Image (cartoon, rainbow, N blue to C red; front, side, top):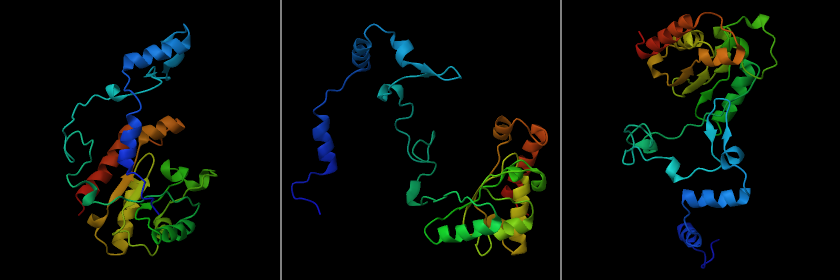
Length: 236
């Protein structure tokens, strides 16, 4: 219960901020150098990443130039969202990752989460699936779902109308295999693949950086990703 003497939050913020004087970058640096007592500002407070990017100890408004200060929602560079209506026309999606080591376990957890507000099917695939490898030949203690055939995927989404719920699936080196399985699942239930929404993603360069290997050439993988994108963009 609010006390009658309570102030609105914005008034409290204004009152508190008036107690402090806005300091310029030069004033802040001067104060910092005094505290360093002769030590080099750059060597002491400026750090560098392995890519040789300088990291300052503090950032302010001057570090963020207003290149497009008057851009509206839905306008380049989309700093205020990609659509003019923002989230008035499109609500936030809850895409909590569901960690399970089998399709059946995932299905049970998915139904539980969907009944409690989640509205995206976020399916984490295991290493073998993401790497396009034979799961029987890959030993992994990873808590993620193996999907090596249509039956696995069918078990994972059993009883869930995936034509009405968006997907988020990171497929690893290529999304062609999972895309084909999803298409087969839709066809099996006589659903229109055009109703599918979400993100069926792949990142072969990311996987190469992580594991140091790929099952085939980058050119082949990008051709597969392009084929999957074309299929979903122009379903027959």
